[in-house]
Length: 327
Image (cartoon, rainbow, N blue to C red):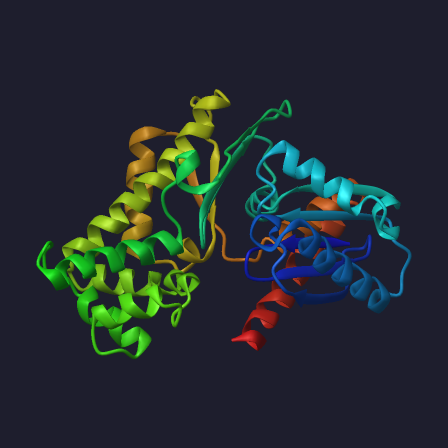
């Protein structure tokens, strides 16, 4: 039984030891930092119960990989919060940050790095001896910059300054009001200020940033250049902390901003990474991290290698269809 929980949704899947997907479901967000620990645990418990009932098989183990479990105290708090639930004490039990699910989705190599750039940004690294490199990923207070939310905020920041004469002209002055169906940037600002527009909706503006950059907007290009730099800084820091500079380590990239596959953006990341870590190589992941969560859970339960191969293909297909159904 595997869970991948995030800030917008939670995926759950039951897979048997032969690698066959027996049941799956999708629920609400389960990031304890944004939803609260009790709500996050309730979402996970409900999904586990639902999917196990649908699968109709005895439980061998669980793997719960949730965003927002960035500090050791947060991981321990989540473990304690689920410990009394019936499924938590059966078989192997894994609880960790969803970065490890992304990492396993992209590679099985024992020395590897992963960086996610979705709504926010985070990174993780693992070494063959079990050592890990983690980041607090708490936003500005822990030195983070980037992700869809920040790209949207930056776009609006530049548009606001262009509108009142403090900054250069930018395509954002037109595209952001158009996105919200409003006449101008001032109306967008007032909508956010008075709560008529959700601040979370700024994360939806990242495609506008890519479109503007592709059209030659220099401000948009500068935002994406910094985002590429921040992604490489995360990867490079993890590589250095784990002393992996001399190995051809894979760098798994995932999350909506990266999975969008903008060629210029990905080329900039590759160029910057090759300058900082010449032996590193990029692996772009578009499959949902639930794939990696299920593989880690299967492996912890002692499933054969052949089963994980079968499960990978089945899981990728299952959740691609689920994504399509939710569009």
